[in-house]
Amino acid sequence: MSTTDSVRDNLLARIKTSDTPYEVLRAPELKALAGELQSLPVEQRADAGRALNELKQSLQAAIDVRQAELLDQAVVPIDVTAPWDLNSQRPELLSTETGTQHPITVELERVIDIFTRMGFDAHESRQLDDDWNMFGALNFPEGHPARDGYDTFRTEEGFIPPAHTSTMQNRVLRADKQKLEAGGNIASISYGRVFRNEDVDATHEHTFYQVEGVFVSRDASLSQMLGTLRAFFEEYYGQKLAIRTQPGYFPFVEPGLEFMIEKPASIGGKPGEWLEMLGCGMIHPNVLTAAGIDPTEYRGFAWGGGVERMIMLKYGIEDLRHFESGKLAFLRKFA
Ligand code: PHE
Image 1 (cartoon, rainbow, N blue to C red):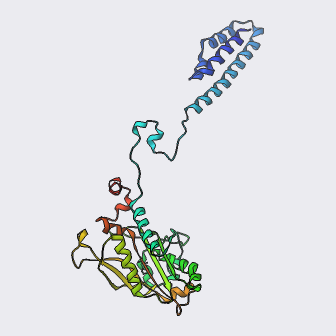
Image 2: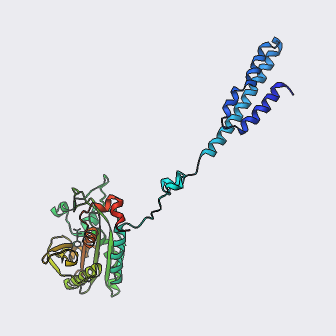
């Protein structure tokens, strides 16, 4: 075996196990071979030079393979769904705290539970809608000033992140109208996120939740509506409540009302301290017509209001902004 061959075998073997394979290129054996080249007779130098070059190339190829191998070993698979401290492979940093549902989710489920036990279907509302469902189907004519009251966002394409869950009314009425034809009623709630271009403060948020209800039958009445809402709120707050209404204007109901409850003494309310909980009223004939329901045969009532407001009253929360803040100190209170 020539010197070159034995040097190659030796160096290749080192590369295969080395953590720094490129250092092999600085091995003294290689330097020695290069030195020997100079002392060879001229006619042997060309062959010996080529052999040395080939040797270096084969070493380089082996180094590349080894480097790739080392890189593979260095890559620790990352679980992108795990908390960062799990991926850091330092289990002592792992939090032992278990996550919980967001208070809005918990309370929304309670709300849905109460209404479904009362016989209502429940649907989640959309987070992107159009002008028709936001305004047109709800009896807001083009250019009507009441449109401005909703501070709607719009996408460049003209879509609307809904400013109230009433955007679901036309869909629900159309989808369920065969229930009326079959002699039944429409009873449905829609719940979900709504968005308004508000100046944010303790009682205004750009993003919040609403629950909306619609009920349609041959003889739906305001007194049924008030009874339904009272029953709901008494169940939600777990106590008897005094209720009151005052006139309110919404183009999609006639008459339109604001529904109020007297703040219970058990949560620090004083007699005569009324809180507005939601907007409601008898569904406007134009809204029934837009959904293909004959308003001379059927009547309906609808209501809609903010979920956070209900939760704030239940738990004495002062600032609406806590809900979307992601602050753990706030969330832990509900754990
Ligand atoms: N959509 C109205 C609002 O957000 C509330 C409402 C719903 C009023 C249904 C009447 C009937 O202000």
